[in-house]
Image (cartoon, rainbow, N blue to C red; front, side):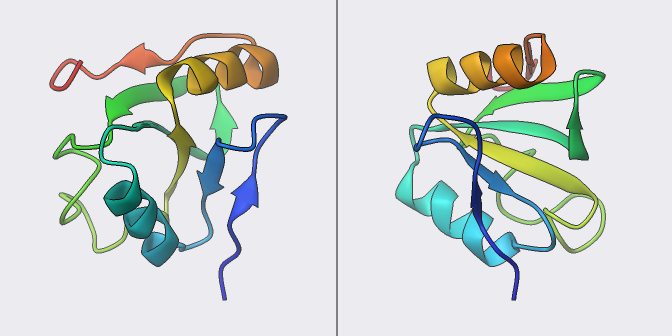
Length: 101
């Protein structure tokens, strides 16, 4: 069974990876006004995209493949928390999604 992990010092920031689509989709449902950073399975400054939780590119049915957390990780929380996490953990800022931000 996949495990959900807290990331950093912010209890509200959650990392979904290792094929935890059920946990990720449940988080989206429970936090419709939240935000999601899409990144590589091992979070990297080279790809950090910030989305609103309602963005169709990170919710619903995956455009490529059948799973959300198989090839990419989702870091979820409030916008300020996620920006703080990215700065602290990776030394940069997530780039806003051009469709939802």
